[in-house]
Image (cartoon, rainbow, N blue to C red; front, side):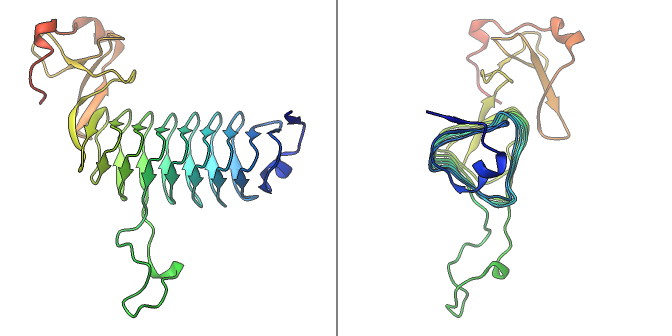
Length: 243
């Protein structure tokens, strides 16, 4: 049975036992949470997950079974990190980021176990670099993001992809190395070209439309006032080549 009313500090110290309901978040048996980590209200840390010192998780986050959250990693509100994902420091996840099962965020430009003289590498012998995920981005199962890269807002990385360069907002990327296959909206649905011949894109589910953002190389949600001016392309227009 869950144990309720435990102080937050008690739930955070080392490896916990029975499922603990603190005043602010939940911790499952076997989770290892540093005393120096900060966990936001309403979050849940599941079995065998490890959250290292200095990590900061926002409100309403879910950290799945066997997940590793590295030292100093920052996560916004409403993030979901699925089972056995590895998020190495100094990764930064904005609000609403999804990280699929067994995804990996690397943190080393030139990974070596030893120096050229075969002496073991210490913390001072390398400079960690991180992966940045902007608001609403999604990383598919077993994808690998090779730091330093930025995954743009609401972009989607397909399962099994290897990301070696920045992904613009709303891009759908897949493959090894990952390349853009199309665009996705905030709902996750693939966007279709607008029927009026402009360079806008439309979500077939929500009707929202998106326009190019020259500052990022991706797309941005268009203003609500103009949304009624465009409609999704007809079905025979949706099957054309992707730019």
